[in-house]
Amino acid sequence: MKIINALYIFGISLVYQPAYCQVLDTSIDTSIIWFGSDVSDPEFIGGFNALNSYLSVNLFSQKRNEIDEKDKLNPLPKEARVIVRFTVETDGTVSDAILISKLPQCESCNREAIRVVMTMPKWKPAFYQGIAVRAYYYLPIKFEQN
Image 1 (tube, rainbow, N blue to C red):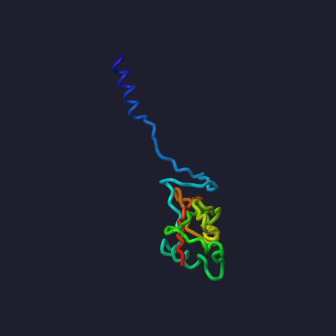
Image 2 (cartoon, rainbow, N blue to C red; image 1 turned 30 degrees about the horizontal axis):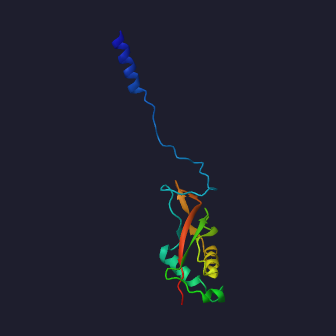
Image 3 (cartoon, rainbow, N blue to C red; image 1 turned 180 degrees about the vertical axis):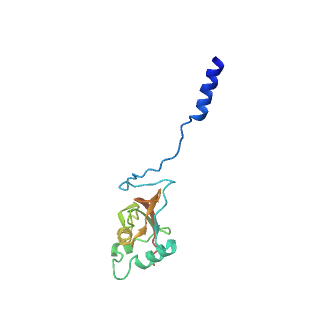
């Protein structure tokens, strides 16, 4: 009888196995900043070449800001660059630009980096499980003294 009970329990355990599957979360919070290996990076429309073209045309354009006179007196180091972190929103707009690394000897360069980032056209947003989410983007901007 013990053998029959053991076989019966063993047989039931073979038939009745709970199924484990991955359930996709359809309630993704798009108000938070997403990051990680499961999140695609936001992209400038047209890629890196288009981004570089945008920066070269718009940084210190003749129509806009020029380098302050006091900043012209301070020579820039050979590798003069700032790093701007900004948020690419779910609709591709850019917001919340801040300087992660500044150029202390060129305040007008710092201001110009923020200005040119905040006036960028829309980006392709980041995606998580097929849904557009907010994401940070870190952009190094290099300045060269003419």
